[in-house]
Amino acid sequence: MPVVVRFRMQPGDEDLQPRKAHADDAAYDLRARVATALPPGGVALVPTGLFLELPVGFEAQVRPRSGLALKQAVTVLNSPGTIDAGYRGEVGVILFNAGREAFQVARGDRIAQMVIQTLPEVVLEPAADLAASARGSGGFGSTGVR
Image (cartoon, rainbow, N blue to C red; front, side):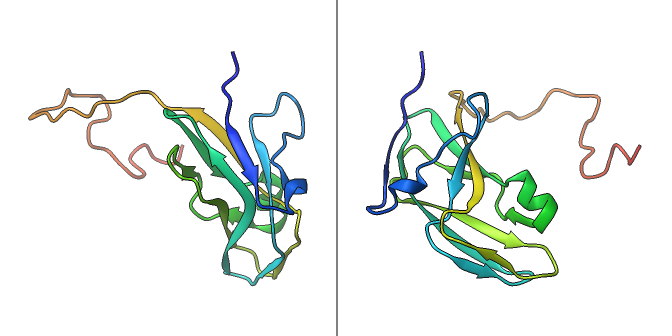
């Protein structure tokens, strides 16, 4: 049975409604509500006109679009950005231009994608000791390059 996620659009922005490009896509495209320019190294919070009502136990993740990342070096800075079930404000996308040239965002451009995920109920339990593992405390770069 499908999960129902209610949403509304900013008045006048109904054309920006999130959509999947293909029925079997994992993500909904998010579109820019306003035009903006991103200089090289620039960051902008781009509004989408989208307001969500996620069920408790779900989150929405805002992720980069692979084509923008590869072709324009534009990505979502806090990827994945998390939208909590209790948030009712406008969904915004924090875009970052890692490229060498300015990037123009036009109203209606697909700027990110949104995946809706179920969250398991988790209880964090304090412990004096943790079970040993093969990796142990090896962290960043501990497995090498090859």
